[in-house]
Length: 280
Image (cartoon, rainbow, N blue to C red):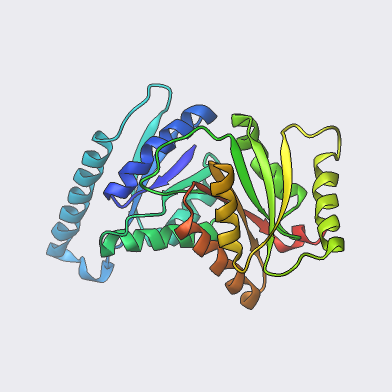
């Protein structure tokens, strides 16, 4: 099942057709959820009527939002309202319920403060969640995935990361482009180490079950280098690994992940690796 958080905005509604297409392709359902906060200290005695009014209003908004979404008989869609802060709530709900395989959110909605806030939540979820997070630009039309750009480095190229993208790769029969970007001249030894690591993982048991390419790019900005490659190859999906590290290194790495999430021109799949799984 796909967890689809929403703020009832137009940008959230615009990415739902992408969620519907992906869900149908993957044989998954979709659960739409809206998180909201309540100051429980304000709701006692007669004031409980105020809480009831808030909940009733939100249910009406949810029903109106869902009623205006496209449907597909092959995809089961459910929805709920949840009390809590969105970031923590999304992480908790997706972690506790094993049915959720992906979290799918809009990255855009910059026309007003509310939509900017939701965009920031999407970026933060992409670095905190335990499940793969699929971030989709709101104005993007659905396209079949033929080329996937994997943002590669020494730590993200790992059996676990490749295993995590394999279901989507095989689902679409896509080609994976492992793109290694550095802001300096690439040392030949370093290049060979990365190439050998990728090939060793892919040929671990037999021939790879998907086509792939390996590319090395020199660019002052990692994000720009990957985005330029995406445009050049007309890729339909980018994959970026978020690696759990110690506090300071985590801040630096998460900052890059957030910038990728907010500026990507194609859907961005963020997968998560623990630090102990990146040392081999």
